[in-house]
Amino acid sequence: MSLIATTDFDVFKRNQTESMSIEVRNPINNVLTDPTGNSTFKLIDIADDVAKDSETFSPTGGTKVVRKSVGLFQYTFNAATFPNEYIASFRCPLSSDIINTDIYVKSVSAKQFMYAAMLKPQVDKARKSVSDDIENMDNAGEPTIRFFYGYDTSHLIFYLERGVQYINAVPPYTALGIDDFPVNYGTVLIDAAVIAALESQGIFAIDTDYNYSLGGNSLVIDHFTKLSSMMSTLIARFDKSVVSFKQLYRSRGIVLYQFLPGGIRAARQLSAMPGGFWSRMLSGAGY
Image 1 (spheres, helix red, strand yellow):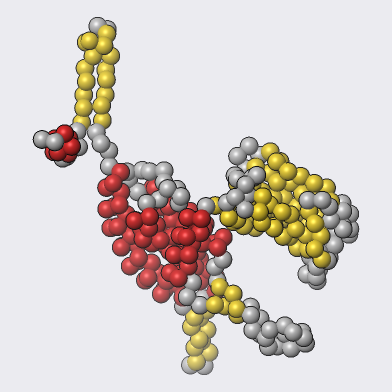
Image 2 (cartoon, helix red, strand yellow):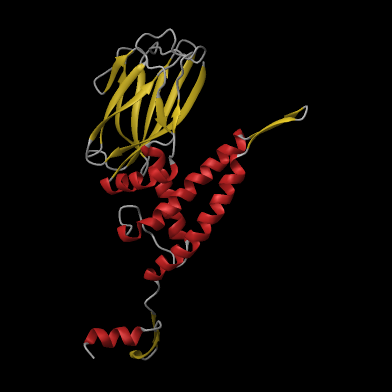
């Protein structure tokens, strides 16, 4: 038997219950099909690599993993009971293959969904058609054109996480997360997330841009050059704004105690006060 493994990811709203779906498809014709024997499910906590929930389910489903239709199974993920980050691992046998699907799942706060909504209009300017007239000409009741945005919430959350990592890496080093990022400086986070998103788009453009020429006729699809130009402008602006933002986290001074053989009374104290320290101190004391 051969193993067919896939990895996916999903993001849920914190303290809610959501359905996590998997599709079991025949690898030969890509048609939905039920497993041929008992399948296993594990919800593995990433922090300690231990399964927090599990079940063995039949081709007709089980108690926790429910069969919704042919080849479609759902697990109810309770983000209140499982508030950390997990790998949901499904292992389903077919007649000659084993379908192994790992889904990275996490629950995030309403604030992160707010930032995702702010990020979406910055990077997602057009809806993409994933269906057309020819594809659905024989499907009664199927809309001829179905549009989906290029990024879903999961993508946007991960771009925000990557963006806040960019910000943390700029000295002075911080350990900010999306939840505790100052809302008044949200534009800095959005710019960082846009950089992360365009970086992903640039990698995609490298694979899909096209240059063809024959007999004096040419066809050029060049997204990468335009993305690079926009990235340069955005990074220049981000470099300035993030440095100004990081001034909020400058060191307030260093105090070093050196203990000598004479004890604490003989200790030497060295202190480095930042610029403006005494003016802030005296103004706060009412002088």
